[in-house]
Image: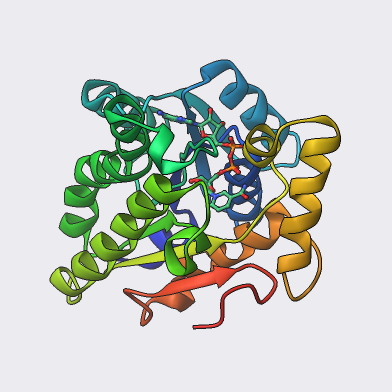
Length: 256
Ligand SMILES: NC(=O)c1ccc[n+]([C@@H]2O[C@H](COP(=O)([O-])OP(=O)(O)OC[C@H]3O[C@@H](n4cnc5c(N)ncnc54)[C@H](O)[C@@H]3O)[C@@H](O)[C@H]2O)c1
């Protein structure tokens, strides 16, 4: 592709209204990337996009449920119409609740896999053909250190995120000569509404957060911007020779 195209890429960030997704939008916007923040909560996505526009970035909010193929296609259509073809896909939407495996069942398993694994497949499946056709693209997915080292009370989620990593490696091989790369960023415990919701409030929540923090060699939780910087790298022009990689952003929690 020519110079003009490299000057202004377009990205879609799923879960873009949330803690990490919003920060990814900000990091990409700061690099001059046009950003569509796509989220189950369309109002929150639009509010996050408005905040991003106030910083000078070009951004829109889009309502999109990654568990619904028709909604993914419709949301992608809105992005194409308003921002042009999508060059960068960030599969960041995710959901979990801390539960012992033996207390979970079919409905919970399906929900976790639907959002965290199949959601990434749906969005990538919708937008990859356009990137392959133009010979340039970036797929960056938010995994989790839970998938790399295991995490009590997150077995189903860890399995779904491990699926994202396996999918990414295989896809990266399959499309290696196409100009499209695929990589995964794995946050450790990161200070977001998802983490707060999982740990709970009050004394019990504070204890869980303290235990998570103790487990991190750097002795702090991750911040959304820590994760966003790694996503922005994989999404950049300069990362064109990097594919199939899994990068932990977790204060040293995972070293592999
Ligand atoms: N916070 C952590 O400690 C942590 C650790 C490891 C991995 N992650 C992963 O990072 C990603 C971002 O998480 P976060 O902590 O910012 O969570 P968050 O809950 O703050 O944000 C997630 C966003 O995803 C959206 N979302 C949920 N289901 C969706 C769906 N079906 N379709 C579209 N959007 C949907 C939510 O509305 C929310 O805005 C997730 O994939 C999560 O699994 C988070």
